Image (tube, rainbow, N blue to C red):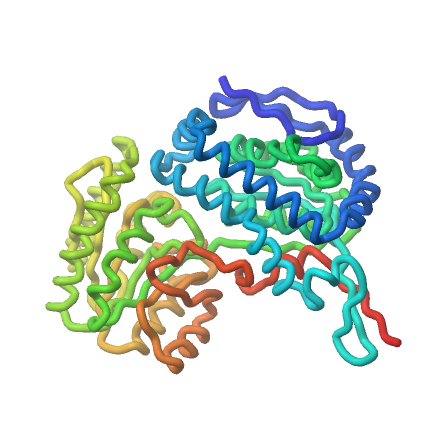
Length: 471
């Protein structure tokens, strides 16, 4: 049985709890309170280390990670993560490579330089914004990050940005990614001069009924709570944060989804990108496309779906997944229901690569099927795409705008990411009016630029406050 302990430099009291075949040591509320009593001093030490030095130390962690990854030292842990997350082993291999990108010195530098008024230097002193005005960005922490369980990368990014901006960071991972995050940040022990970073990081799994988590939300002197996830947890956490007399910012990331717009004239270029993003993370990222609008003729769409099926066989076949007997039975029921509603259903015959493409005319039919099979919600659908044929671009825009009202996407606030092959300026502006946060190349919907905001917000800006000076 795996044993998960908090990652912290402080001596703390814990409760030993078992869940899902894992034994984890959960901090007590009193030890969490004691740890936060040291946070102000630790933050000052981290701030005085200097922003440029913080970048260098975290970049060194990335280099050390890459060395271990290429040597095969993480193979056992990769197997464990594949088992706990349900993702294929080949996907875990790709995610480990992406970790190195997060810690790239150029990326870390750009995150601060482009994400803060005054740039990276504003973390160490006042920077002019006009002839007689200047600002300095100060850490808002201590901060609490409550992460989702769909990947190591989403909790990794805000944690890194929190440390870069000089904050004391408490990270509550999920059971599925806590081992990976502990492994990543545990490498700080091997980096000379990283003590201020290590002292400002507290990683611990906290159960839903945890007294320590309740204390953090209702009473702890926090500057920001960053929640990644969906309802009902989002509302429960927000209500508790609202009781906190310290009035921390409540920054929510999710629940969102992705969308694909394919024009008939670009359908050949779109096939591979659509297939990749359907298979990648089994559509569990906020950027993962779960519906598509095809602008073109029925004959062209038939050709596109045929090529998409071939690409899904190839891409998905390289990343096999396990589907329970009950899950497979429900999938078959949904496929039959959609065919009865008049949709065309094309699907895989390989149970380890159970992709499904649904072709609907003009409007979505999936919501009607989900009303019959309510458990077939967005979070239980894997490698499942509904493609809706429309005649013009304005119809595609309308589909994106109304997606949150579709019962098949219950709980989703809106579309986060729109992927397309080629758009003109008017089309970009029409898509911006849907409320989406990102409009990107279809081939790499999951990739983020260091300068890119998260759901419309600059995380470095959210994790700091500005001191204004006027001479």
